[in-house]
Image 1 (cartoon, one colour):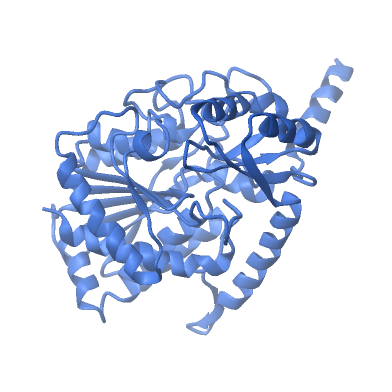
Image 2: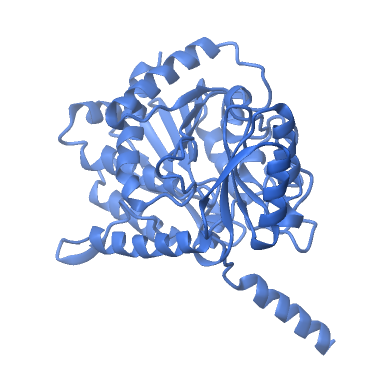
Amino acid sequence: MKILLLVLAVIASASAAKISYRGYKLFNVAPQTEENVELLRELETEGAKTGVMFWKQGRVGRKADLIVPPSAVVWVSQALREAKMRFNVTVEDVEDLLEKEASDNRLAHMKMSRQRSGQTYKSVLGTYARHSAINDWLENVANSYSSIASTENIGSTYEGRTMKLIKIGSDGSNKPAIWLDAGIHAREWIAPAVAEYIIDQLTSRYASNSNIRKMVDDFDWYILPVANPDGYEYTHTNDRMWRKTRAPTNDYYCTGSDPNRNFDFHFGEAGTSSDPCSDTYPGPRPFSEKNTSNMRDKINALKSRLKMYLSLHAYSELWLTPWGYDSARPADYIEMDRVADIGVNALKAVHGKSFQRGTPPAILYAASGGSYDWAKGVADVKYSYTLELRPGNDCSWFCNGFVLDSSQIIPSGEEIFAAVEAVVNAMQ
């Protein structure tokens, strides 16, 4: 028994250690044929065994990003050459990239610190903040703008973290509502940071900007900056590249489900894996994850008023419209596309970023059980979109995937806020 307990303690200790990506390389690969795409799918399927991790899936005409452990660099390179696939290594050592990110983020926190009401107030804006700091900041915002803002705990996670959202809206009952969430995939740090920027714009500029005042007077905004708190916190403490939740699975060695495959709409179909070790494992059943069931309950309570659902993700610079599960399109797709087009044009006008719009099967890949498909198909939210934020598909600059420099937070927030403002005004 003592030996067994010792072994379990060693395993637990190892699992708690921070994962290093020393020697991992970031490959940027350009598939030219469907055979090339199939090879990439095979590499992704075997990722749990080989350690190869896809940051971005590829298709013909669309590059893939994958990080490759030292033990697999030679044979992956050989496989790609034999398939006559063009590729280059854009990051020689991913751990160096992560160390620089941590250093830059510490400097960003110091820069954004400022004095407020005679006390040191550390704003999360422009930084990649921890979950508890974000929750504290939401309370501060609600206290500072109490006439239009309040917070609500919509439930706890598997590990007991509070899922806190902020409601922003002026006086009035039963107003139409807009939902925005971010960070459902843990490693996509830019998404919560942009949600925080949107919250700040709606509150701090309410009194001085007539357009924002109208947005807050006409709608109730429900914004959930971190939709996967357990996973998000784990990326800060243990594994920067973690994607899923942290709840156990039926495989002792593999933890977590993909929360954006966990919604009860075409659950377990295209774009999912039955392997609990896979990043696209949807869970044992719909809404098995506490964070997604908490979201479901709150959205269902609001759904008679919800006019728009927005979910912020990263990365690739895409404006995704339903459906994600296959090539079918909603009956009102033309109207949804019209509004999306207005959004991408408004976004481009800010910093020149060109987001591609369309359904995931058309421009990315099919993925079932997603939140925005469920919001459209079950909660009956007419305008339902997923936005994949910076960086884009052009690796000539900022090609570090999920590890986006904190200097890009505010510009990304500015363009996304302009897009949100445009689509809200464009709704019928």
